[in-house]
Length: 117
Image (tube, rainbow, N blue to C red):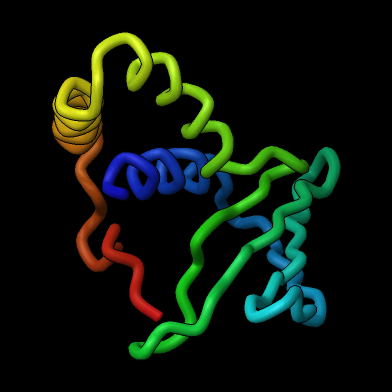
């Protein structure tokens, strides 16, 4: 989860001073999707937040950026490691990557990678 958070913050930090437009949420089974656009100088970037209701409030479980799911993207990368080396090796690699990313670019003060509701 920490690797996903670090990756997401790294990508979203590329956008500064853009306008974010939220469309009406739509229910998909027991979850909700929120279509979003980041309006840039060049062209809008389509995003889709996929959320579920947890006891502590709404949580985002996946984000599609221009039709590419962050969760599916990481899942396909992990398949090969799981097949070749196993779960423990995958977890070790993920921990190292997160530690490296936070050392290279720690979260800004007041910007929490833990998300919130």
